[in-house]
Image 1 (cartoon, rainbow over the protein chains, first blue to last red):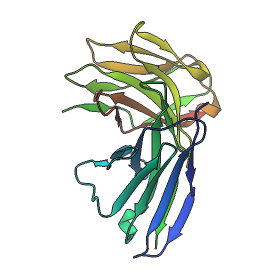
Image 2 (tube, rainbow over the protein chains, first blue to last red; image 1 turned 60 degrees about the vertical axis):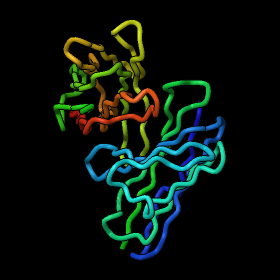
Image 3 (cartoon, helix red, strand yellow; image 1 turned 30 degrees about the vertical axis):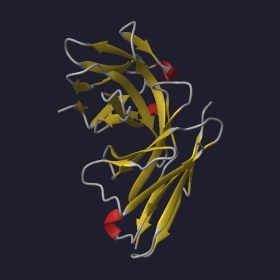
Length: 116
Length: 114
């Protein structure tokens, strides 16, 4: 089946540093990827939608300069949390629409970010 | 506003008992509906989805859901649960056919007890 590989699964970083999270589609081309953030015991909140080769579309309230999204190829999208602070600690999940489907979504396994 | 509501944050149930997890949506446009399961520190796994056709949808692991347009609901059911069904369940809807982003409910924690 269509798989999205998300790395790292866990990362601990110091406050003020930047962290990059990668999502790769392993056996399909992901023209559209979504980035979600999930707080403990809460739902997934859409942060942004990225389309290959174009700028990401951010949801209201999400800081573009803080959460940099790059979707430079059909198989790779990255989320960089810049100048991380403890309040950025969360579970981040990427999702892609499987090529050849209209509403076939696949999800990465998530990244647990802890900022200390 | 378009939204997805899961009325129960937690549902405790005994093993082999039936269970229903409730989901309601609010949308002024056509909607496609999904149920996902999430195990701790993992991504989401699709249980089932409704796009069109029969309103009763059968999914994996013995789960099924029924789309009820008049009640704007998409409740998930299983006739007999197992310990391994203990997880977080999310109802989601696609109400933006252009962007195709999913809107998620707040989740329901299903706790199956022996």
